[in-house]
Image 1: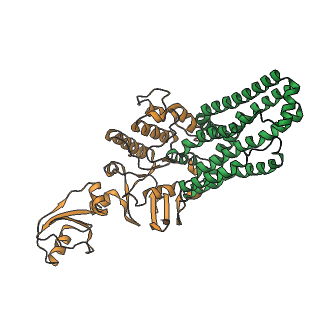
Image 2 (image 1 turned 45 degrees about the vertical axis):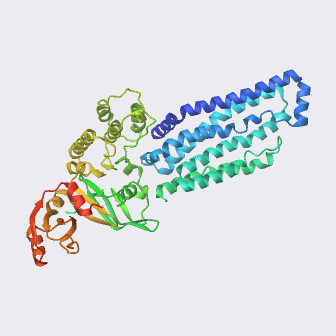
Length: 224
Length: 297
């Protein structure tokens, strides 16, 4: 446990400022969306606003679409850029632990940090919009946002995968594949229509979580 | 009696693509010895260091450290190895206190005082990040961390890179004193061969695809000789003779590198009917011997 605590300490030193920015960004955007909703609700009148939402299916929260991706980039890059600079990852892999444990402690740390940056904000946001919106609207809103959140997690795993890859040309290849994979999560779908996609997106996110194992294995074998 | 080997590389063969780095390389490092690995750029020094640290899988053969294959070192064995990455790379985003706090959790015998004794000599502020330090200061932080870890084996990859002469001397003197006093085994590489001379017990010189020398450094420097002489012509071909390890010449001034003695070289010249003058044995440093052995190009 002590060893893991020390490993996490290094990750914390690297990421703490970027994670703070990510947390503020997430909360800031969600508060902005809520304030806009509240203002529209109060100025247009509740019934008119709700009927407009139901009729036109306005995505009043669309500004949030790429925020999880931005948070994943902040956390992922702050965590892995220092490790690939000067091949500093060798220092971590030289620590007296099994390599898989080292890599997965880093990845799980990033995953938890990402969740801490995004999930509490989303829960508060859900609670707040429930004041003005009925469950018939709140639920599809969350269903629409869920792919974006999953996209954030998937992007983080893919950043970890790319960072561990020892060969630059493969990094570019993975970048292209990642772009294609992530575009699945950020498709412009009408509110609530992403529900059928969610199982696939969950599966892709789960699969992406094991991708860093493959590239770290390649790094360890010195694949060129 | 067979020495107790800390490092054993057995029939190591590696290629990058189709390019052979070396074939059937065998290296042994006995406990308590300081071995310096020398070679020109591309001779395979970094490849060997990477294999030793488990960052590269050889095409065939294996390296053992404390009897364990370096591809699958256990945490207990990793704990016994101190590794200095080329250029004294460390976690530059940390300051000296943070990095000490980080590493101390991994090593039960962590010697905090050994680290801070070195760090206290640096003219740095307590919260100064390693990234803002000079190369010499970074080297001292890296050295301090290794001393605090108190490993049984130290692997130092190009430890002199970027260091000015004063820091190089400090590093070498500190390392030799520490290794000898504590009975540590050291495997190191450096581009600056004059540094090696003060530090190492054994030498391993690699050339492209092969090992040229592996012996105690005293044996090598006492056996390997340079003779210079002048000939009437500048087109005499002496390289093919078994006595010649390497022959360099600038016009009619010849440098003849050999494991033979003066009499043997003179006999060679006379047997070929080659008239010579100003024949003399040149004193050589380790660097001279290295260049003599591997050639200038």
